Image (cartoon, rainbow, N blue to C red; front, side, top):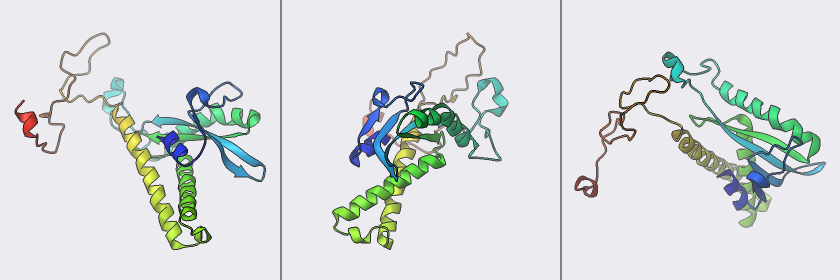
Length: 216
């Protein structure tokens, strides 16, 4: 999804094995070629995507399941995951390539790390500039309220798209114990079905099935 908006904005995007390797021959997930620019010239941006957990979920500590990992610091899981990525990539890229590295961290409740949010804001700013240029109002860029309102709309849209993608990814990691199967020992198996029926008490809202379903 992130690679998609990079391409739609006209950037050269590389993914997977196409990403430039660091000095340690490790690769991030996405590379935006010549995305950044400063007095020294243009630099590519590599970022590595990762999802981290906000709550305990280990069945070996059942009494902790669902509790916050860091109740006094909700940003701690994001910050710690970002630091791990930085330790693995940033210096190796900076020392040997004309590339900047950014950790793109999202939690399972769709909270985003600050550096990732800054990237989304930068992208929203560029999309807004492109929008005003295409509309023949380039002289108003960065100065008018309409520019700021449009940029806020683009930024919110990007965050919503990333949040939706993160929510879908988090949903794929969920293992719901809605049928009451107890925590079993290693090697044992639960014989209850894994499918989640529509009649399950997990659903708090009434689901009205169409005649096509009820007549089957």
